[in-house]
Image 1 (tube, rainbow, N blue to C red):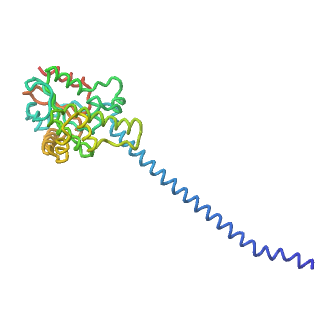
Image 2 (tube, rainbow, N blue to C red):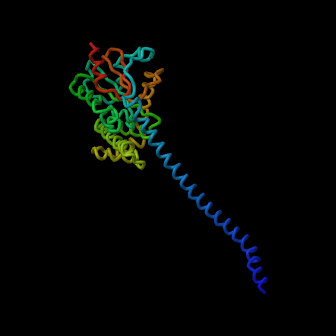
Image 3 (cartoon, rainbow, N blue to C red):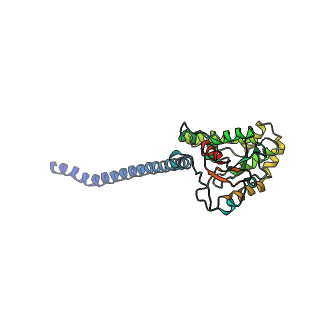
Amino acid sequence: MDNASAEQPSKNNEFLLPGAILLAALFVSASLFLVSGNLSKQLTDIQASNANLTTTLNEVKAAFVNNGTPNGNTNPDNTNTALASLKMSELIDDDPSVGPGTAPVVVVEFSDFECPYCGAADGRNKALEQQFGAGYDPAVPKLIALAQEGKIQFVYRDWPLSGHPQAMPAALAANCANEQGKFWEYHDKLFENFDAYYTKRILEQDANAIAPGIAEFKQFAADLGLNTTQFNSCLDGQKYASEISKDLSDVGKLIAGDDQAGTPMFFVGLRDGKPQKVGGAQPFGAFESIFKTLQ
């Protein structure tokens, strides 16, 4: 009796031990599955976070290059035959301008409303101006002031880059505003709003910031008191696409062979003289230096 009672627990253990091992294995497997699922989700979250970070870093790199100095150069290009054979007066075309058509000095800017460097040159890109430093002196406001004083003629031409999805619609919109005599007011409105976008996207690192588009461009026209029916029809019909295409063709010839060329691009010179090229968001001092040589 005593022996039989002593052996019974031993036999039960023979059945219970494999069961316990099986349950432990199932528990471990379930835990691993849950941990694997959590790790997979964490990995997905990390990849998404890295993608957002990469996007922001790429934008910062695009905006802040050359160690925080204005992109481009002021070296004349003597190898471009198209540029060498032209007079400044031939670059004016029929584009919006400030200043008398008889001014001895002409400055022609090829620009892109979505380009951060163009905004900085216009005094409307806080992100880049902060990077350039307190001593940075945006050129375009002072060039326009000189034109308003009658000392130069300042001309704006379009160079919407293909990498900027809103640049072409913005250029079309600005030309439609020009049709109603409000180009410069609309020009300022565009740069101010792209400045607000870049401030949110880069300085405030707001991944949800959205660049202005067609709806906003139409609202800007209303804000400026334009005939919105006329403006909207003009913009929707891409009325000035051929005008912008001509600007693109002209600047393409003018920068041929220059692998450093980019927006904004300025050409400066006496009306009947040869153009000198000034690339990037150079400070006003770069233009002053050229003006001193134009006698």
